[in-house]
Every structure is written in C-alpha cells, then in structure tokens.
Image 1 (cartoon, rainbow, N blue to C red):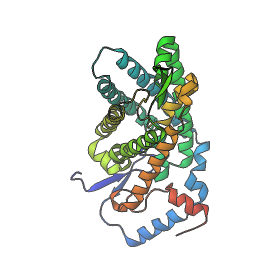
Image 2 (image 1 turned 180 degrees about the vertical axis):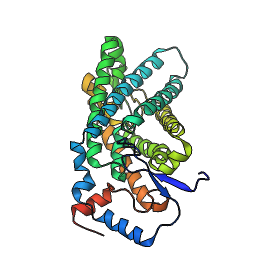
Image 3 (image 1 turned 90 degrees about the vertical axis):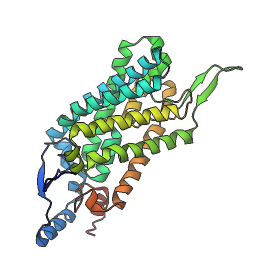
Length: 328
C-alpha cells in the first residue's frame, strides 16, 4: 500500500473519533522484545473506567466534537429526505438510481465536512461499531449517538417546516418504513415487506457497509495510503449502492429501503409519528446485529492485518475482561 518504510497508526481519538486528531508514527520494523512486553502489560492493566472511557463524559473536547455529530446528522436527515421526496416527485423513469447517486454525493460531502470535527460518524452504526472495535470508548459512542439522534430530530423538524402538508403525508418526511396502508379492492390494505425480510436486509446491508467501506477507515494504514477523500468517497458510494439495491431488488411499495442509520429513522418517526413507529425496532436491532457480526469478524482475522499488535484499549473484549477482573 505504498513504498514508505514508516506506517502511521492513530489512537482511537486520531482515527474515526475526531478527538484531538493526534497521529502517532510507528516504525514498521520489529521492536525490542522488552518494549513489546511492557506495552502488552500496560494494555492489560487498564482499569474498567479507562476501558469504558468514563473521563470522556467530563471532557469538553468530546462534547464539542459531539456538536459536529449533531449538526452533521441534522443536515444529513434534511438532505436525504429532500432527495427522496424530490426524486420521486420528479418525472424520471429511474428515481431509485438518481436518488442513490445523489445520496452518495451528499454523504461524501458531509463526511468530508464533519471528519475534522468529530471523526465524521453521523451514524449510530459507525459509533457503536467503532466502540466495539475499540477505536473510541463506549462513553464517547453514547455521547455521539445521543447527539446524532437529537440532530436527526432537528433535521426532520426543519424538513417539516418547509414542505407542504400533502408532501409530508405522502412521503412521511422520508422516514424509514416497512409497510404502508394503501387502497385495495375491498378497502384499505397493508403493503410492504415482511418483518423477517426487512430485518435480514438491515443486518446484511449494515455488515456489507462496514465490511466494504468503513473497514478502510478503521485501518489507519489503508486511510493513509488511499487518502481521506478516496476513502470517504468509497463510503458514500457503497451507501448509495446499498440504498439502490435494497429499494430495487425488493420492489415493494411501502418499503423505504434499508435504513443503515437508526438516528435517521428515529428523527422522522419522532416528528411525524404514526405508522413510522410500525416496525421501527427493525432499524435498530438489524444494524446492531450487523455491527456485532462485523466485530466478530475483526476478532477472527489475523490481528496484524487490522489492529496492529495489541489492538485498541477500548476493545469490547478488553472491557469484559476488565469488568470481571481478568488479565488474560
């Protein structure tokens, strides 16, 4: 991935977390055995509070970074929902394709804008997955996720303020749905996907999203070799493709496609309510299972290909070990 002799690794604050954007240079040649032993002991001796990142709750920098997540999520919801509404309202034969392309572009631009502030999560899937892997602490992830949900709600409120009541009712503020009630030959009928289908789509799409795009951002060697613009462009492209696939392959009226972002689904549900709460749990449970599956994958592959030699100090397994007082 490059001819440089030095490989740059970042800690959890310097990668996706945003933090102080510190980067720690690390020579790629083997280190002294005593140094390795000392670092290994240091990793296993961390307290539960350090593993969980409890000090992050009292860090002004973390709360400042969360403002980037809040505003980024607000803009994301507003832009994505307006894209959904405008493409389906326009006179085009392939609204799904146009919508997916524009979504990919918008997400890329938003990520480039938010990355310097907070790491550019703007999605509970990213924050939770990064916390499981250990790139950020669980405490920081909680702060980010709360900020993302608040931002998504603000974005939905902003959209509600500018669209007509007819469009709001027709598109439900671009919210996440698995079914809708439509007219039928013998009265209103419910159309859409079955619960199991929608849940599996959330799981699969979330895992593919993490595997195919965020994997490059998690590995700081990849991000450095490819460059942030390339990495974030691929993230946006993968999301756009997954949106297109999930809305096209199913071809079910009433199904809004894979959410892959619980906060984005929550905002319109809070503001609009009604049928948006029907099956809403799918857009949280599915991505959560996808994140856990991705984390299990990171524990199976050879560590040298991902987490350097010792991994990250907030890694979920390390947290569990600290919880039960194990130094294994």
